[in-house]
Image (cartoon, rainbow, N blue to C red; front, side, top):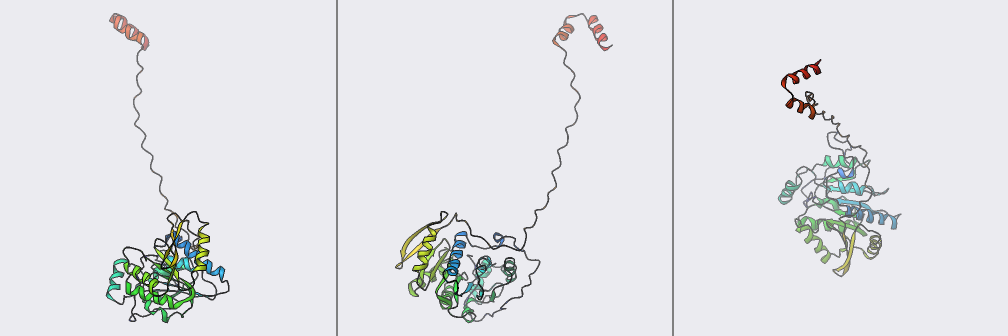
Length: 326
């Protein structure tokens, strides 16, 4: 999800909880659909997460590699990623959540954009779709290299602080923790309100050997390994899609795929264990009051009677009226 500036680089913060208590506060909302989980995770990126994680499974069915997310907000992308976890693998999520930020710039960032973010809300959302929580590290992302094994991850999603110094540290951590052919995804690398992310990511392309594979409107996907096999496989898949535009151009000496997926069809979403709340029954609108009865209209005299009244002598007119009354 974009806009999850919930981590920082400081050894001062502490790590809270490994496998968390999986009892959920019943007062918290329990999403009945994936779309009910708040966050920024668009269909084009859902499709690419699905493609990369499925590609890793299909091309190396006996291999193992852990999953890692740095910055989680309320869990939308973590819920999606968790469905690709295989036996023997570990999924780790690192976020400050409602912990105190370790430095003033990160604290201001948290207060500005994430004042309502809580770990309990993340847990309630995640457990609405999965049987157990991932390994949770409630701390700045600067500690993650001490909590995950070097070279253990096949997929890392970096979506934490937007501050340049912090993103730079997250990139170094992702490089250290990824397997040789592992995939990294960086969020908000081109957003106008996150220039620090853009500077850090493109700086890594120029100086660390990070090879970009594909970009969407919000994320860049790359590897420090050989990008050619995965790029060719991705292009073959994209040729079958009629709901996404893609093009290729050379950047930093390597082909870069660009995708526009404004009308992309979302992949299958995780299923919630909760049913939607029934819509409140509305009482039928009262019927409008019946119109008041009106006096029956008196029949209009015929033209012959009107002429008789005008032409006959009054005495004959009265006699005719008396006869009709009788």
